[in-house]
Length: 226
Image 1 (tube, rainbow, N blue to C red):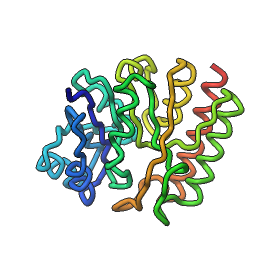
Image 2 (cartoon, rainbow, N blue to C red):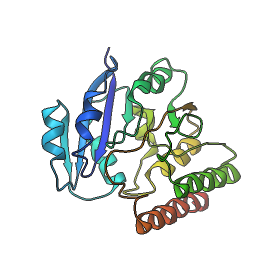
Image 3 (spheres, rainbow, N blue to C red):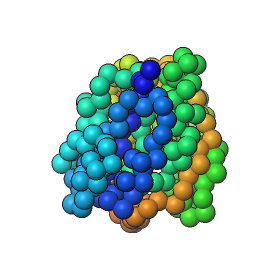
Image 4 (cartoon, one colour):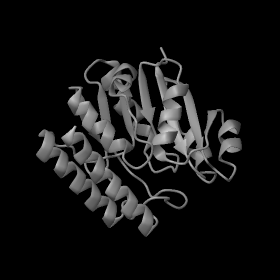
C-alpha cells in the first residue's frame, strides 16, 4: 500500500524540479507535494506538468515551506523530505522509508558524511557547520548524529508529536533535537549527495552562511535551556 507522502520545498528551482519529481520511482509513494516557496520563476508550472501536487507558501523560508507541506499531506504513514535542487540520490528512497514502514524506527536521516558526497557538493562551511552542530548535540543530549542532512523520513504521527515551529534555517536541527527529547527511534543511513543544480540560497552567499549558522546554534541552545 502506498503510504509515503513526499514534501519538496522549492524556491526558484525551475532548472531542477522536473528532474527531481520525475526521478521519484518508489512504489511506496502516495503523493508528491512540491511547496512553491515564494518562487519568481516557473517552479510551479514545471512541477505541475510533471505530476506533482503544488501548494504555495508565499513566506520565504525552508521551515515555512516544510510546515506548509506537512499541512497539505493526506494522512500518510511516513513523510519524506527531499530537496528540490537534485542533490539527493533518489534511488535511496526505499532505504529511508522501509525501516519506518517495517516499524524498526521512527526517524531516518540520510547522512552525507556517512555516504558518498560528490566533489564540490558540500562547501567547507557546510562541513564545519555540521560538525559543530552535531558536536553540540552530542555534548548536550549524548546522541551522536553525523549530519543535519535534509534528505530524511519520519513517521507521520511522530512528526506531529514534535510540534515543529522553525520557519527557516533551524528546521533540520530542531527536528533532530526534538526527536531526542521525544525518545524517537532514530537511524542514520549513508546517503549519496550530488552537486546541486542552480544556485544555493544559503551556502552560496556569505550572508546565507552566517544567518544559517547563527540560527542553528541559537536553536540548539534554545532547546537546551527550555
